[in-house]
Length: 540
Image (cartoon, rainbow, N blue to C red):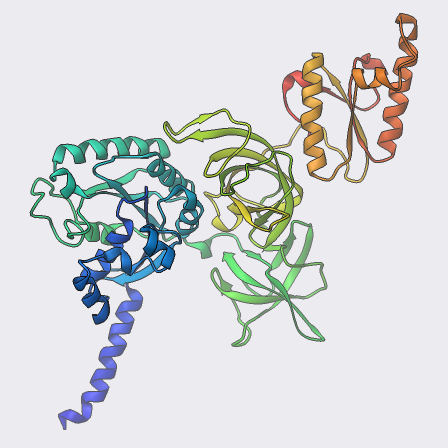
């Protein structure tokens, strides 16, 4: 009779195991650092110790001298060169937690791949070769991790066996890295001395380093708090991915809810426009819902016809997100060709795709000191703060508030290659700046020192033309060569002023933005006066 209950008992045991597994927390982390610090070897050791390898893998490891990196580096080029090129994702688990680990390449050439892996991580394991200490690439990876919101770091000082397990070496590296972390605002750093190849302080304590009494790497990973931001408690926001025309009489707007919840009857706004409407149905493949929350993919229909397309954002009418056509952002430059200020790129933020250009590079990050420094352009692997101008408004939020609406990429319009990853830092306030009406010309009369007027005019012209606004500069040298070449002497001044006024008026009526960078009495100006000594570019 006991055997009759065995299948039911087994089924109950399986269900209990699955329920326990479902309830176990999941930590996503990335391993990063400089090249040859042992990142792939460390992950291979974790998989080996967690007994998550197939028998043939274990046999190959033992026959080949425990080459743990071969478990992670799957590309033939990686195995041939002995470096990691692409991000490799691996899964393992302990009794206390599940893990998804991203092995990021350490070589500078593949920094873009590291940024990709870090974008979804909750924590970072930064490896440092005990023989080399903290390098520029270590700082660069740490800076990118901090930009992407990672605040939990485990510093693994690897290859301690190659420095005779010297505690002084470990203490020196740990102190140097903590100074880096303090500059980056990373408060939680646990330093661990290790020899990944031999498993010392990875999943078991090292007898070779009795002076270290802290946690092993596995113990530290098990205790790191997982980010549990309650997205459902935030205002409702959903980027439209596509317009769902399931039938002749059906039009819905499909997407994944980024935050908040939505119910039939809720009033929403369609951004970046001003349209308001009421949600009629929440449609899914399994039927209509009475409520949908963050993380769910749904199709919304409205009680009335509205203009809504891919790239628009549906948001709670009572708490809409910000809309902006200018961004203050940090850029990680990923292309071999340098950034060209004023050149038009595609900017993709969420499902929104707009034309954008970098108005100016505010500063670059010096990787040796992590301090800002002057720079005119970004080159491969540079990180810098930039001001971007867009050809039309988009929904945007600081990255610290929203990964979905604060992270973006820049795309080369010719090659369609991704050239930069960006994180919105702030939305510049344009209050108080003279505004122009789109589709109409305007005249800006510039005052100040002659050299400052010209420099100001060229910067503003570059910014307007990047937005597709035809802009001309009228300066003294150009006017004297052409329009006013027949005028000279004080008696000709009234005629000079009249010609400039009339030329500026005709150009503005034709829809051009006209920057007059020549001397003109205040009472002869008809338009907006700008004192260039203040240094601010007027908004368009």
